[in-house]
Amino acid sequence: MVDAHDLVFVHAIGGRAGIDAWPLQADVPGARFLVRRGFGDDELLAAYTVDGEADWLAARVTRGTVLVGHSWSAVAALATAVRVPELRGVVVIEPAATFVAPDHPDVRDHVRAMSPAFEEGLSREEFRRRFSAGMGFELPAPATARDERALELLRRHRPPWETALTAAALGDMQVPVAVVTGGWSPLYEAIGVAVAELTGGRHVRLEGAGHRPQDMPAFTEELQGWAGRLSSITP
Image (cartoon, rainbow, N blue to C red; front, side, top):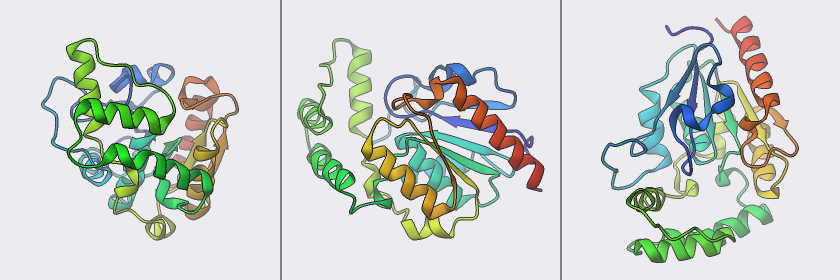
């Protein structure tokens, strides 16, 4: 059994990986910071799916772990909790779990706007163009080999709405859930509310945090307080 305060952090797709993605949590006792496959110097997978990453995560957590995931990886964290019901808890930050509220107008519009970027057989440049159009901001054209790899890694991630995870599975899940949103996006707020309602979980909205609530000291305080309470009530 791992330590009762074992906190395992899983970074999102874009930007920093491993401990670099969690600067305000770097000194949290018991914290472990995973580097997902392809985000180091290892070879890229042909494709990254929520369910494939959940299988990978399930081998790296056990009874006593509080699993913390951000954005796309937050959906993988939820799928991991279904696979590992002994988890002490799961914290999802701005989860991209579009399947929980498919009929919400903001969710429906987002999926419609982004779907063209995930058609099979697109070139890297066409993917960049379609992804930029769907998101409403321009992904910069890669200028270095490192940029090329980052864009290719993004391209190989399948959208979260392709997961086999369902709203019904979340409703049946026994692992305690906390949802953290940044109060900036109707899309993420709609998803956050739905995840919390389905799981009976705690929903914390950190106004002004944007897409990275973990960069606010209040997030770390909430996380440690919640994990501590779980440790006191969970055998």
